Length: 237
Image (cartoon, rainbow, N blue to C red; front, side, top):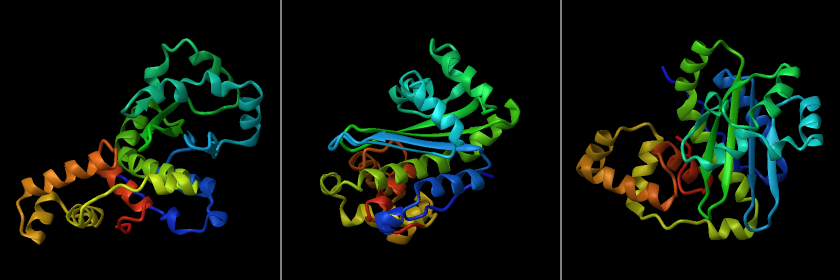
């Protein structure tokens, strides 16, 4: 059974009241991981955004030693379009530089980074890690990956939309039918269910969904739902 965390509609909360770290903490608690980190750069303002649940002593060490310049969980993963399990990064020449220090701080070495491609080419990264045994981690990652993808897009879009100009530029033009279908997807309906409800073929539903994913610059339906919620196009399921 895949774990699922309902989206907190951060876009509907005034910016001064948003608690991004609190959202990450809730994500960790619900999905059973120890720490989570979000990082991105705003392509309009150039402002860097970063939020993490890591302890303060590690954050201070990380920044003081400029480990963000070498960290493969950020740098290597940002070149991928699919989630990257940190076990794939062990051959990276900078892996030991970061993970030996992390080991000294008793931090997990098992994790996954979910890259998010924004509508203007910006890249966001959501990382989650755990110290459970490897066999348990493989199962846990499989169970939570869908929720991580969904929440990664929603969190990224909410942060990027905090810039008024970027928010204006990031409004995609979805048809009323595409929005209607996406709302049913968010409600948990299958492709066949939606076809029956709207009295169209499941093939037509898939054509609309493919168009929606392209317009929203996402690689999965879960990401499309997360992005549509953050942009205010649909309501959370």
